[in-house]
Amino acid sequence: MLVIWEVGFAGAVSTSHQWATAALVALFCLEHVLNWRRSERRRDYLRRWGLHIAVGVLVAALTIALLTSHWLETHGGKLTLLVYGLIQGAMLLSLGLRALRHQAQIASLHLRPGWLFMGSFILIIAIGTALLKLPRATVSGATLSWLDALFTSTSAVCVTGLAVENTAQFFSPTGQVILLGLIQIGGLGIMTLTFYLGSILFSGMSLHDRQVLGEMISEKHLAKVSDAVRFIVVFTFVTELLGTIFLYQCLPGDRGFAERGFQAAFHSVSAFCNAGFSTLPDGLADAWIRDNGGLQLVVCALIILGGLGAPVLRDGLAFLAQNLRRLRDPAQNRPRLRVHTRLVLVTTLLLLVGGAVAIWVSEFCFKAGETNGGVTLTAVFHSVTSRTAGFNTVDVGGIGPLTVHFLVLLMLVGGSPGGTAGGVRTTVFAVAAAHLWHLLRTTPDLVLFRRKLSPDIGPRALALLVLTMGWLFVNFAVLRQLQPGVTDARLVFELVSAFATVGLSMNLTAELTEGAKVLILINMFVGRIGLFTVLSTLTPLNRRRPVQRPTEEIILA
Image (cartoon, rainbow, N blue to C red; front, side):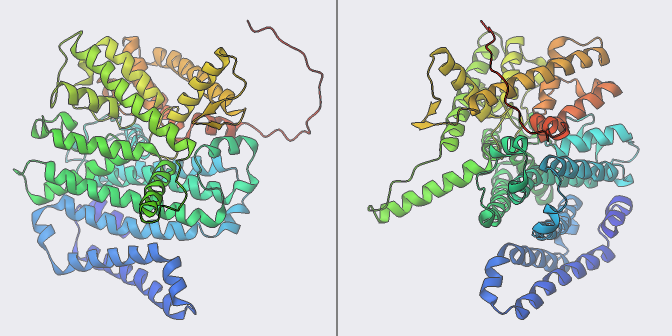
């Protein structure tokens, strides 16, 4: 409450806020020190609570730096506010992860994982809506309606990027920091909750829940869940920190350290979480960073890493580590990537290259499209960002009609399971295509990379595609009635962008009616949670015993 009052109403980090934060940090660190001294096996305590102790050391160092040096306060309020938000957020994250250790209490609720996922997102969105309504969240004289606050909070938590107001010009530094926090929680929270809660409740899941989470969870043994969560958290923050450093180096040096630091940090988090929000007036098409090829490549790298998914990243790093050990000891067995990892990497590469070529041909061969950093870089960047992130380096409203079709297809496929991206997922698209190919060839088994897949995974992938197309068809029909006078291409683009949590828009978001905004924010929420997860959670379980029935054939073709 103190933080909300100081930041949301006072609009500055006052002395009382500084010392209150220092007191909280002192209590946080003192608890670990006392627990360590009371522990009979102190080495085991350090090993078990290493992540939380590292958080304590980090927040203590930042707090001491802020109290002993007033350099940040004199060089920019945005960066100071960001650092205080990082301190508070790190402690809350640590406390949240510690609360999840109470497995018995969570399991005793007998809730299906889908309800936990949706409930956590709804809670975060509601808190974000209230925070964005704080007086200091917007610039002086600007007012944000409750619907627009809900829309913006949903877009940030669901890491979509659609915005009814210009983030740089409408929201104050306080509001931008709030958006950054919502983006970080939305991007990191979904992965942490998926792995942790899914593994904890795995023994009590229904068949539907197993189908949904089986594609996202790489580690199903409860004993290794802590390692998975630790990897996700550490990899996320390390990657975002490195991204901030690289982006800072790429930004022009005509602005102060605090401004460049905040812009680098915001865009690093937004890119890795595939959110698409930008604190520049014209986004990455802004004149300040126009034709900045290095910055665009760093953003592309962050987007790809965030969209690959934690299972692929863990398997890939383990594969590299095993190869390094094998160089020292050739007698060790040759490592092998999992089929899931190979499928994601191959599909991602094909979509990136194929999308770039398609955009290059449709936008720069058939018409004289706008460029930013050159024709090739513009095509590559939008092939990357259209599947996951939602950044744009040119005006999307001016792209050609054929390019619109290619971007809609890339947005619909989206990223990979276990990551921060949306869409139907690369694995669903690839498995459905492979299953269809095997049906045409009348091949009995679905084999990928010399491994036989389970017989139900192909039909399930096709079912997810059909379900998604049905959902989009119904929502487009409703959106057509709620938003008259707009071309079908712009409506489809906006709808698919929201459902796939991409965030690209043909300059339509600000023109949406209230009913259309509600429909779009519902699609952002459903797309982030997962259509199958939402529908299977809302569908009552069939508790009747299966009955054997006579079998008959139906003519399909």
